[in-house]
Length: 336
Image (spheres, one colour):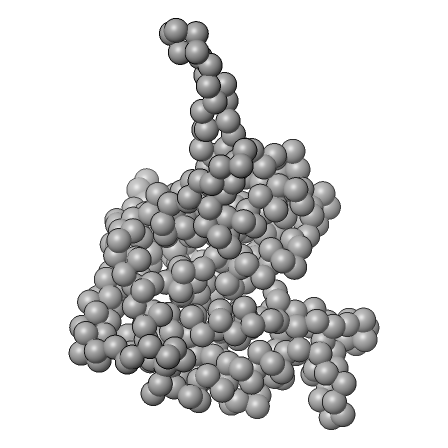
């Protein structure tokens, strides 16, 4: 195994000890989440992978699939200060970032005071993010990438860690504003939330319609989460995994090469940020699965949620009824 960085190799025993302690804490967090979220194991896994990798996630699914409940539960279990913003067409950037107000003291002296908006939280839920205007959506752009906001020329740092989990309804598109590609690229993963299986839905009925509902308890705190995120970045990555990441990401870019039908359907593809996202997420997934290093299987499992919102198909693909998922599935076959 070899790491991509040029820094000296870390102490293996120290990493093993840290990883074992992290795995125990992660297991407790999973158990607490499982108390209240049923039948969405893959969604839970990908949400935790996103947070442990230090990124943001876009949750896409129809109403009523516990997206909001999941974000609330993650905030509680991970011990993070959470806030929620319901995006609407009339929402203004100041409603998210905050604004300066004019104060007057007892002596009559006036001065401006900055009142922080709901973005100043460690876990921000942006509910139905595509309902806000592009101007308001762009208010999140700087914070998601640079972890600070600028108001009246003054910089205000966001709390650490800082994560945005945004939701989007894929059905109702009237009165919505599609997210620009630049902002989509800031999301580490797009997590599709599907309907639960029969047994899971039966459990939902039995456990959420009675007199009492289970309540999750904190299993981590902000410091513990930051330690896990630092550990993820120190995990070793094998050459085969690096080659798989680069091979799939680079294959997801347009090409007119003969015999490459999948790439001929791509209008534009992912940039190097997608490679970085895959590198981080496969490490986090390995740790979540109690492993000390990722495998090619991790790359194959996370290629779709990492790439699907970072690429678009051309008119010919749409005319043939070919979707992004189909193209990514074809690209993955070379590594199976």
